[in-house]
Image (tube, rainbow, N blue to C red; front, side, top):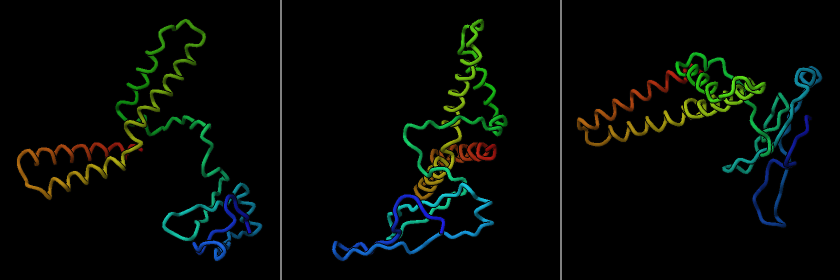
Length: 173
């Protein structure tokens, strides 16, 4: 048995006290070979709103499922960004924000500005592609179910063009 983090019980009959029954029905097991391969593995029991069971989450890297709110996300440059036509412009703009090239801290400041600019650019352009695509598809469906006019056709074409651009961005990543 690998043990667990968080709640000990993964099932509850949802009855009021004193008739409440809780149990640890499921377990994650391993053998010595598996334990050697995944030495940092952790097991977490998590709530699912629509079930009387908790899920068993096995994390093979041993990273916490939820970090503390005081932790910052680390910046990681994605090589795939270099395929985006406007990535170089974002970097150039960030470097131009640092005005004093003679300062010994200017390189650090340029890197910091680049990190901030690329993070925002990524958030604006790539992070929500799936959600935005779904919204556009729903909008196209709404328009197509209504009366078809020339303005509706033009709007549908605009939305389709936006979807194509998003698909290209998604391919980059």
